[in-house]
Amino acid sequence: MVIKTATFVCSNTQVSALPPATMPEYAFIGRSNVGKSSLINMLVNQHGLAKTSQRPGKTQLINHFLINDSWYIVDLPGYGYAKVSKTSREKWEKFIRAYITKRESLQCVFVLIDSRLEPQQIDIEFCYWLGERQIPFSLLFTKADKQGMTTTQKNVAAFKKKLSEFFEEIPATFITSAEKGNGKDEVLKFIAEVNLD
Ligand code: GTP
Ligand code: MG
Image 1 (cartoon, rainbow, N blue to C red):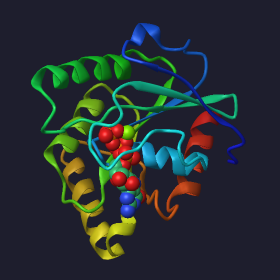
Image 2: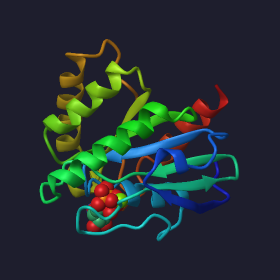
Image 3: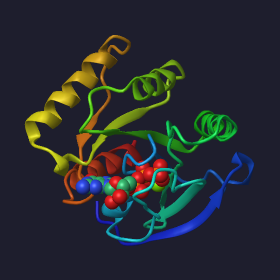
């Protein structure tokens, strides 16, 4: 799929204020600083579209980006940032979980996992939570440029093994680098195929 246009539409904290659920959408979720906003920019070829930062906690709202006038990419705040207060964390939980469970046009949740790390409990638990609700998701392993492929493959395999304790079928998995462009064609092809269904 070729991305012809990608434009920012709106930022929200409330599910009730989101744009009408008339077009398919794909949400990017994962731990703070895992590279959600960077990956979105890489996929749509626009450096500054989604705001990124070296400091965790940059994205605070539900951000909608309209792609090719026909579907949305949604950039979400990250979870698991230790310095965030309990109140903010609870707020995140509430509005993200409400968004995921209520948004009718949500086709697939992309769960971003740091490819440098061994399986993290918080990511596994989030996948289990999606699985329990039968919410379609796929795994995007990020920052693959930061280490050799052997380490990446080892961490990906370990994560999938953990998931297999709960899931009969492991979701689609992609290895990506926002820095080098890895995974771009594969992820866009996946989205195009889901959009056709
Ligand atoms: P929050 O919005 O705070 O939850 O973070 P985020 O998940 O949106 O992460 P963001 O895209 O802001 O990236 C965090 C940091 O990681 C930035 O300094 C990025 O430049 C860096 N980064 C993201 N993706 C990659 C990648 O593929 N490779 C490398 N080397 N760095 C990356
Ligand atoms: Mg972000």
